[in-house]
Amino acid sequence: MASVSTACYSHICTFVFFAAISIFLAISSSAATEAGQPRLPFKKIYAFGDSFTDTGNTKSITGPSGFGHVSNSPYGSTFFHHPTNRYSDGRLVIDFVAEALSLPFLPPYRNLKGNGSNGVNFAVAGSTATNHEFFVKHNLTLDITPESIQTQLIWFNRFLERQGYCKDAASECKAAFDDALVWVGEIGVNDYAYCVGSSIPDDTIRKLAISSFTGVLESLLKKGAKYVVVQGLPLTGCLPLALSLASEDDRDDIGCVKSVNNQSYSHNAVLQAKLQGLRRQFPQAVIIYGDYWNAYREIMKDPSRYGFTEKFNACCGAPGEPYNFDIFGTCGTKSAIACKNPSQYINWDGVHLTEAMYKVVSNMFLNGSHSHPPFSYLLDRKNKEG
Image (cartoon, rainbow, N blue to C red; front, side, top):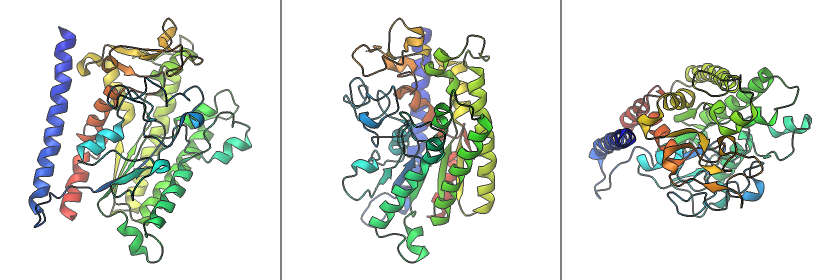
């Protein structure tokens, strides 16, 4: 009975959230055109990030090592009922964001059909914040995705040029961001992961990753981005991959890998300080920080409240192995088996999350409880500025 009641609580929260968004959209539509078309807060979304945000830029042959089977079932089974090259059983945070704003799912840049009038997703699974050349220099390129956040910026610039933006006057570039939300999903986890076992200290990785990442944000803001959401790193120490590799005495108060969670926490602290600097530098822009770390932690502390019964084991993986996870038998391989109820699991394949988890996290970002300032502030600013 407890699981039923808590699951219902989660659904009620979700209903209330989408009802609130609907009310906002209704208010915004008061300035509807003569044709009767409602005026939505945003007409398009430009997304960046790694596998937590990638909607199809990475195919199985180029995906992160150990997770190169994203084109196989049961990926995508919950919502799409077939693989979509998303690293989950269904929708991601960015998909729920698009739905909440009454926009279609974002097409991946590498498979763009049409003009991308509702936005484009440039996120790439396995990508890094640090430029790829750094890993080449330190001989850390084995099975590493070569695309970085800089690559995604290059793709974005090419896309703008093809749309006729940013060719001459600066005003042309700013026009590309009219009614556009820029959503930057978490990125930086792979930077640390690729350096595991090397002599490169975390401080070096953090400085390089955040410097590069901040540079990309600054470039977007200079081009005219006005409404930006930046996700921090999640509780990476709670992922089955981390749990299976770390020693048993390296655990925090919620049972996750303490050293890895501290790594992400330190990264996020520096990132937030940099975002504050960008807010001062670009006062005309609204820059929201999506607190993935604390959102994830809140769920881990009381998973049943959100309908979850399994917070450590992967839903899809190797039965019998610790945490249902084996790097040599990951989801999508012949030996892997998926659980019957992914909605009860936080983790999907050992590294990536379930649709159910992404849905809860997206609600936490969009309803303001884990966004700073609240996402409602961004909507209000957009509504006032038209």
